[in-house]
Structure formats: C-alpha cells, structure tokens
Length: 117
Image (cartoon, rainbow, N blue to C red; front, side, top):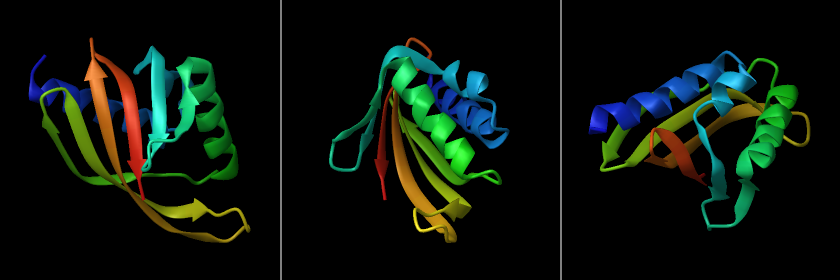
C-alpha cells in the first residue's frame, strides 16, 4: 500500500462521515481500532465503541459536515486538518471546530485515530 492509498482510505472515511453513512464510516475501521484524544486518553475502542461515538455525533449534529483542506501521509500514518463549521456544543450553541486528526492505517483499515484540538 503506497502513500496515496492510505490518504484515500482516510478521505473516503471522511466522505462517508459527511453523508452520515454510519455503515460506510465503520467499513474503514479495524475490529480493534481505537480513537484517542490529544493526550492519549481513550475516547472509544473496538467497532462497537467507535460506532456509538459516531452515532452520538450524528445525532447531536444533524447538519454535520467536515471540510478537509489538508491531508498528507508518512508511511502508514495520515494527518488531516478537519474543520466542522457548525459543531453543536454541549450548551446547545454552535461554533466552528477544528482538529488535527492523525490516523494509522494497517491492512487497508484504520487502526488508530488521535484527535488534537
């Protein structure tokens, strides 16, 4: 798998995210995948845990869309700059949110995601 392949996997996952296709999103995750925050704390692990996170995000953000102006890879690692212009905050307000998301891709599946905000 070359560098363009791993970027394509991550971008295709974002495309599924943008259409709120939960099965499409999950198609890209390994069974033992993990999502971490910027400090390394586990947000979700395993397909069931990750699915639950995405379901909650989609429910709380009915107009969700993420723009990805930048994506690059080094080996099997992909970094993207993700911008959600209308993110629902816990207090009910909406604001633009930005993340750097770092993905590890192994055997054509996302194995690890770390979210920096």
